[in-house]
Length: 441
Image (cartoon, rainbow, N blue to C red):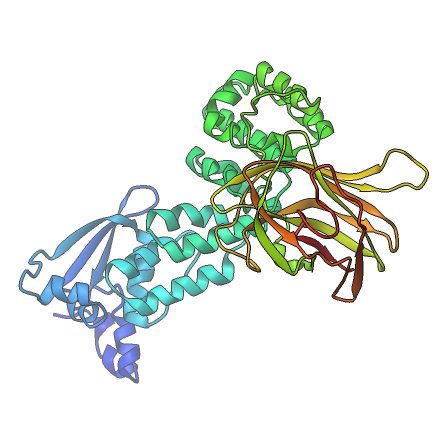
């Protein structure tokens, strides 16, 4: 006999939608129940109705009405929590869902498991609208666990583009070592290496606290692990940054610190840390001054002999890098300097330098294979002043330009290249330095 609270409930609800909503987690006429653990590990029982579930999910239809239909009246689900399952049921009964950062990934998982595509769309929409540097490390591990590859890609895009903010977030300190290993190897992180190092150092302190051990130098090195430490690109730091931040942290051994100072002092050593720059500024933001109408292959490099070119520009611009010729499938070690030519002075005034190992891009651009060298900081060029850019390049023979133009008009600026030849042969007519990357402010 029905209780009084359920008497004439049908007449109080004007349409089928309201009557089905009334049945949400309602024991009235329930013919199936689910047992789910809450966040504290206690059992929570949800009352449900096979018909409502089956008309919303082909998986649940097969479970209750298929050839191998489930005969039990109570089902335990160990792969979700009570908050997430409640929102999953709410959608099936009410066509709405109350998503939060703590439940959205498991709701998305249930939507995939039981093939409820509209709920999956709602979850993706919520994540897309709410993904931020503050919560990306809360979401990324769940996206990886549930193999949501599209969401994983979106998360990494946020990590790459807003790395400075992401690595300052509270959630960064709680990530697993495996995820930290994935972060430090990424070429696409938009972050200066010294800031990445400081973030890893903070993480090591928190990890020691989490493991209830003293944050000594030895313990910090141990919890961080060689895989992380050896993929921090210490050669991308200036000597001043390295000297101020790294030795006292304890993350590097004394031998590693000594080797780095030897490297800064131009002592030839076998460098264990990567020198390949990260892509701090996307190349697409630059205008590109292209020097050569023709390209060929076969430009050779000799040890200790640099390529270089002298140029001037007629308007103030900010130089952000250069594009060099390469050879498909090969990497090049490059030591590059940009200098101001000072009239009457035998020595140029160095404005910027960068060292690194660069991999030739897999696809041809403008008929040749090459690679960009992106500066960490923009360098302002004054109009009608001569600048010298030189590069000591180590690697196999590469593509090169010929028929070079002494005057190149590009996006409202006029670049002029002089006929002065460099020791390895590059000049205004041919050789290296395919493009100068710049923009105006």
